[in-house]
Amino acid sequence: MKRLLFLFQYIGKPRTVGSILPSSRFLGDKMMEGIDFKKAKYIIEYGPGTGVFTKKLLEKRSPETIILLVEQNKEFYSLLKEKFKDERNLFIVYGSAENIIEHVREYGVPYIDYVISGLPFASLPKSVSTKILLESSKILKKDGEFITFQYTMYKKKFIKQFFTKIDVKRELRNVPPAYVFSCSMSQNSREESYGV
Ligand SMILES: C[S@@+](CC[C@H](N)C(=O)[O-])C[C@H]1O[C@@H](n2cnc3c(N)ncnc32)[C@H](O)[C@@H]1O
Image 1 (cartoon, protein in one colour):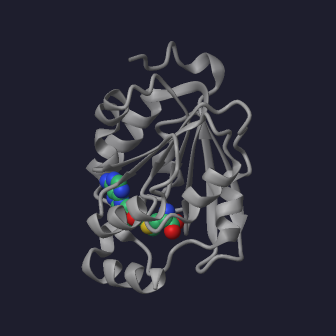
Image 2 (cartoon, helix red, strand yellow):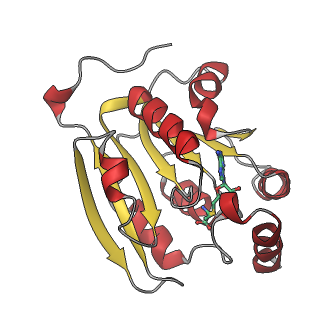
């Protein structure tokens, strides 16, 4: 059922949905691998779609960790609201990751430990990707990470402009196989992070 919804959303909005299928649980596990769940207080997820990564985040987080989802597709947003209606410390925004600074302010989130991104940077307009990556790099904690997956290495150079380091892992058990990019800033490359 979720797969069918995904396919229909892709047919209607191919550039923003970016894939005909939701990600696999294997890719979900790989996206979670680098997260220190004991330390993380604030986690943001961009483009959760039907919630494959969200489910993993909720299973692994400490109960006090705040998770903020930002989804700009109305159908996915409604599905997520219903699916996760009983979760505490989970906030779901119907909006664009381009406006992340406004969203974190609205929810009183003072900084971000991790951004988990499902956004299809390969097909989003360059101006949109630029705004999202720039704003995200501003609000991430000094030792925070921006974790995203891509189906090719094509956008690595573009994404690297906003960070100083990208570690790449591969997950073959996804359709199609995917790369996980863990993007971070070296400690001395920035002055201070965002504060509300
Ligand atoms: C490739 S799908 C990934 C869905 C899910 N994370 C997964 O891996 O199965 C991309 C998702 O990003 C969402 N999206 C695209 N542009 C967005 C934006 N500017 N802000 C928030 N979500 C966006 C789409 O609606 C879609 O849910």
